[in-house]
Structures are given as structure tokens and as C-alpha cells.
Image (cartoon, rainbow, N blue to C red):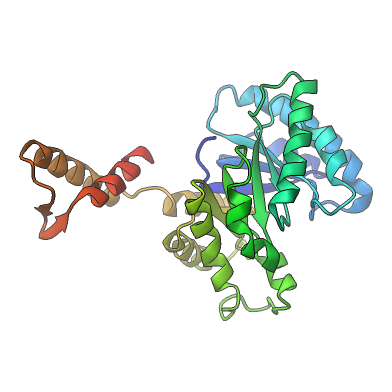
Amino acid sequence: MGRSRSLIFIPGNNQRFLEKSRTINSDIICYDLEDSVPQEEKEIARESVRSAIQEISKINDINKERILAVRINSPTSDQMATDLKKVITPGIDAIVIPKVDDDKQIAEISKIIEKKENEKNIQSGIIKIIPSIESALGVVNAYNIAKSDQRITTLVFGIFDFLHDMKIDNQDMETITGFMYARAKVPVDARAAGIDSIDSIWQDIHDHSGLIKDLKLGKKLGYNGKCIIHPSQIEHVHSVFSPSNQDIEWAKKVVQALDSAKNSSAGAVKLEGKMIDAVHYKQARRILDLR
């Protein structure tokens, strides 16, 4: 898959938002069949999302970097299998699975996806899986979940369901500390499994300064991106999770200095008063690759 700096949720039952998603420049467009869709509107949402994917995937031929995903209902719901049956169609790139507690749930869903790929003449294995970690059990099992299936490219941390599961009041996010272990563990487990991680949403769409502060914290924890709920948040997310001009210039200097050092058999060199070596070279190459 492409970049995962931003994942925006689009309610599957809102036709206006579905049409607007054609022009949204989020890295991942995630059509939602879960929390934002009332029970009585699940079926019409499935039909609308499938039509949107079929239509927008044609536009995606131009913007191949944008990922089209669907968040289905949880593995423990009676909606999950029907969701997959209806929305797996040519053009879909990924399935976001909410409230994943263990790797057995992934195995079941992966088998269904494989079956649907065969039925729909979709290339085998092309549809990826993005599990969302939203419970204490999910946090404990996050590494096993992350490495359980080759389709998995990314873990998402879902904060509000996690707070509910932990019986923590979520009224004042600035002062809550009880979720920090879980928030910090998810990107570590994802990286250990060799995949990316996306941080939880920032709920107040008008509080851009709070969003930026939260984005910087998420980046320091090791996340690759952020879940968002409004297009106005995309610019801030991409700014924080993309290398700055200063980062790029530093990376170029590091690569140049260490490439030159290889020719002189030097393992470490001094750059602008600081010692740099192989680990800095890897970091610099990663920054340049993200440009």
C-alpha cells in the first residue's frame, strides 16, 4: 500500500460525504459501516459504499497513491460477514477491522476475503487488512495480531472504545493518562511486526492547536499517521507526518557524509559537531524516501 499519514472516516450512509470523498486528499479514504451508521441504515450504507468504491476507483487510476478502505462492523457482531460480502468489489484496497481482540478474528476474516477475491476475480492477496486495537485484550495481543496475517499492513489505535473498555472517563483528554501505556505500546508492537501504525482521532475539529500538539506526541511515540474525522485536519496531519525542509537537508548531508566515509573506511564521522554512523544513515534514507 501507499502512504498512511492520514486515514479519514467517511460515514457510509451520507451520500453528500461519499460524493465529496472523490476530492479529499487523505492518504486513506475509509468508508465507515460501523459506529457512524445506525442499525436501520446498514444495508443502504453497504450498497452506497460499494457504488462509491466502484466509481472512485476509476478516479484512483490517476491518483494511485490514495487507498480506498472500508471499516466493517466488529468481528463479534452479526454484521461482519454481510459487510464483507457486499463491499468487496474491484477497486477496494483494504478492510479496516474494528475492535480486534485476538489473531483468531483476523484468520476468520482473511479467509472470507480470500474467498471473495476468488469470486470477484480480484487478484489474490491484494486486499489488505488494517486491524483497529480498541480494548485492553487487543492491546495485550497487539503484536500477535500485527504479525498474524500477510495481508496486515497497519495497526490503528482506537482510543475512545479503549477508554470505555477500561472504564476511564473521556471528558477531558488533556488530563487523561490512563491510556498512555496502550497508545505507546501499539506502535512498538506494529514496528516489531514490520508494519505501520496510525494513531487515534482528535475529536475536536475546531481545536487545531490541540490537534497539532497531539500529532507531534503521536509522531514521537512512533506512529506513521493519524485517524481523522474532518478534511480540515488533513493539512496539519500531513505537515507533521511529512519530513520538513530542515529534515530533508539534514538527511542529504548525512547520506553524503557517510557515503564519502565508506570510501575512506571510516565507520563514524563528525557532522556539524555531532557523531553520526550507520543508524543515522538508515534514518536519513528513510526521511528521503518519505519526501
